[in-house]
Image (spheres, chains in turn green, brown):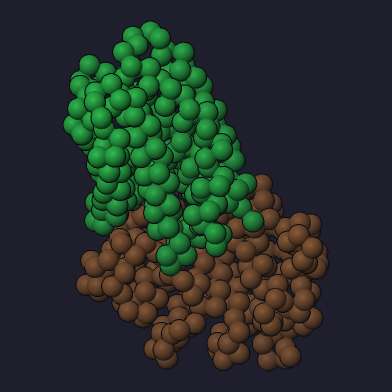
Length: 226
Length: 223
């Protein structure tokens, strides 16, 4: 176990170092998220009531597409100079490769989601301070399930020609339970429901996250092996 | 040492990709201190054999032994294998130094240990190592690639078309490094289309055709 954690840490530091140097994942997805938030606020904003109905969809749609973009970009790095092959030839535990990519995705998307929450609050004229922590928790939990599945299929995409198609076609049906739970719980919260009414959705998200994480660690090695 | 070996035995190795038979019963013995060249046309099974020996692919049938060890049950043996291919297998946005430090850590070595420090003189690594690998010339990439593959003193060294795209100086550097590995006692397997490289380096040449060994002899007498 300590070998897996040590290798995960080493590979996560590598991800962060490359991102700090290039900025390509956070900048690309951050700009994309900003653009979607601005365009949807211009298109759908009528008043505060309608905003509370539209905002959950805007949040989750943006996070989903930004996530696909981020994971695709992150795994594309492994194609250059055949570096993923080098990683698979090393004694690095396969679970560590998967977990480091997952952790990096959570860091990158966490930054983008923070910006997105602030933007949506501002552009849709919503006071999110009241719900900030429950909303952040929902987004974080939804992102864990989404990224756990997304990174599994994104790893496959390193070796296939139809990279974006593999991600889009395979990920969305699988992560539907996580996304639906997140959207409904966010809608309830912004609609004024107390936290106790969304606890069930949070528990469901937690169960989905655990299932996706365990499946990801378990399936990664057979999926990337010949 | 638990993961040491001086001999590799390949027995009746078969590898199927769907209906395609990439290997059709290859048997081979590889010895420490010997360079074996694997030759053959495209599709003869060379790369598949190399992938199985690198523990990157599992055979469909047949057995593989690294000394007394079954490598399919001991993935830690990957730490005793090095591979040099035509791709450098380094991150272009990291510097050469950072790439070597990362490799060292993944192989359980200290990123600033003597194994890493000793590479500079051995592979003529210079100031370019402080720049991102994206900016390297082909020759600089090759030096980094050799250093990365040999950093952990592998017991099995696999060379997959290593001279592709190299100039004369690059091929000389590669040849010297591989001979040094043979002297150190490594088992060396060279997969190449280059008859010149094979003749310059190999002690033994094995020819594959449609997944089978059709010739196996010392370098002077092989077909």
